[in-house]
Image 1 (spheres, rainbow, N blue to C red):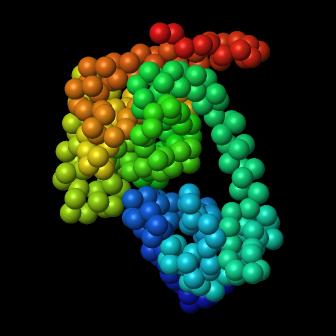
Image 2 (spheres, one colour):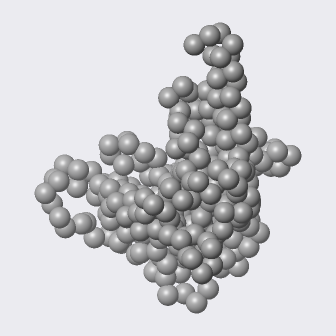
Length: 310
């Protein structure tokens, strides 16, 4: 390959990556711009497959409650050119990851995605162990109790328990909440070592723009609260009428950092109740879950799960 041809090839590759970067730097319209962008290191990585990343971004354009989306809507959410989206949706449909409605001319997630999702949830054994403990706290408090894992600049609920209370948060497994403004996200950040937290803080800074000083102050307070009390709070910081407390959870194999929150409407869960009752209970709950996980790990053939205590 001549020098000029190689230079042109490198330039085209760079342009493609810049376009992809621009397309995924914001969150789809339905979710705002909270998820942030891929790290620059990923975009410079010669092993990074741009076409694959674009296909996955198309799948990420679908969120809870969306129903069907057309190519134009997917293009708007991902920032990708519509002809590119058309080719990607065609391919994903052929592979079973999307389903196409001839009548509406739109797409929805296919069974291939469902199979991957259930496989992922089953492989995260923490949820199966944690659920009875979480449900016991939900029944006691009348709150929603959820287990979450980070995805970009959001936390995703991978297990969710609620009580029979008539008033509760309208969230469920698969729901996404912001990393920097929620108790769950702050608990996740507080549990990270500095060298892992700092790159995320930089991405949060870029995502929040002029609102960053307020978000950063909330995270700093949460880290201090975690060091002092073992839990983090969000008292109207994400949504004015939502209060919550959260505690990080690290499985015995230390393969990931998760977090569990407990909260609900602000008029039912004021700061005093969070700090004097639910916060300490949640700390104890996580300790019990970690002990149960340790027991399961040491006895992999033991099928019965430990029941909640007190």
